[in-house]
Amino acid sequence: MLIHVVESGDTLWGLAQHFGLTAGAIADANELESPDRLLIGQALIIPVTARQHIVGPGDTLWRIAQYYRVPLPAIIQANQIADPDVLTAGQSLIIPARSHTIQPGETLWEIARRYGTTVAEIVKLNGIQDPALIYPGTAISLPFPKPAIEVNAYTINIGETGAEDIREVGDLLTYASPFAYIMREDGNLNPINDQAIIAAAYEERVAPMMCITNFTYLDPGSDLARTILSSVDIQNELLSNIITTMENKGYLGLNIDFENVYPADREKYNQFLQRAVDRLHPYGYFVSTALAPKTSAAQKGLLYEAHDYEAHGRIVDFVILMTYEWGYRLGPPRAISPLNEIRRVLDYAVSVIPRNKIFMGFQLYARDWVIPHVEGQEAETFDMQKAVRRAISYGAAIQYDTVAESPFYRYVDEQGIRHEVWFEDARSAQAKFDTVKEYGLRGVSYWVLGYPFPQNWVLLEENFRIKKII
Image (cartoon, rainbow, N blue to C red; front, side, top):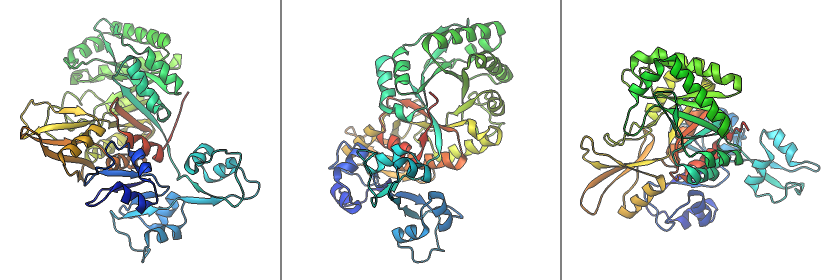
């Protein structure tokens, strides 16, 4: 896949001609709702077998060729490089796909094993109708190497709507987590309508992960957390109810999302986590937690102080970093998941938590703020497709913040009110996936399903092999 940023004069037909594709192929890959209207600054996935590489500090063509397992001369030719010893940080390179000419007697299984890929990936990439019918002398493209990761997604939709959310992307998920069972001060749980979601998860070989939390939209949950964490009896009752629910519903693991915990209750929270692991592991259940995005152990604030990164990394099976919400719905406009801030969180996290226990959070929604921002004024939250539709309807040129690695635009509505919209696109998604690879993380966790972002799922599959545990 390549990513093309629309320039003045670009048309879908012209891009198709340039890349040797049909306009429909590009429109389908991006699920374009207005194929005849492209915006300056709009990022499009170009579904070709090549890849794009942005040269980083210290990169050499030899290292790049080794990483992608592509012959060095092929990269030089594809980019018409005059001096292979001269690269510039930030330079964009096209990495041509590897190819293989089928030899007499070869099978796709043998070819896949030789090149470290799968038959399914070769079949899909080359549009092979019958894997048993391949002919000597035929040249086939080979998939690029992909690291294997795990992927979680939360869903706030319940019932059949939530189930459909899982079915739409289930082949790209390892875990699905309906949000959420609210804890009560007596150790009971408020039930949720999750049966259809769990059934859909099993249909898609996705492990259902039960999520418990202490907060609601109206209550930060600090006092509830204190009540539960101050009583071993309540905690034991809570864990018994969790186990019963997991057994009855078919959950395979637990995600603990205590938020806004008083700093004084930090050690009690750690003790509860150990108690939860000791109770659940003998049943074969895994235990994970959701962590606020901290950049140091000394970070102050109700969201952060009771979240002990080192203890969570030591006690539970994996952690989900909530690396989003810098662009808060009640705050001033800014990137929701700025990559420069995410990297600060990751730098701290990997210093105290094993990398193979860390999921990086990834938001699936956009926001529209009225500007100038007034304290307490709430931004509108919606999906990426709507963000692009809105930009088209107002003729807004999309800009890109290269520090936050996030697209945005401004427009004036019919009432003369100014707005600023921050969202995600193919560029920002690819930058986040590159970060997951760079840090060697366990995977990605999405908040939250129900917001269409087709480019994300295309790029996720292009970049990674998704592990299944059932």
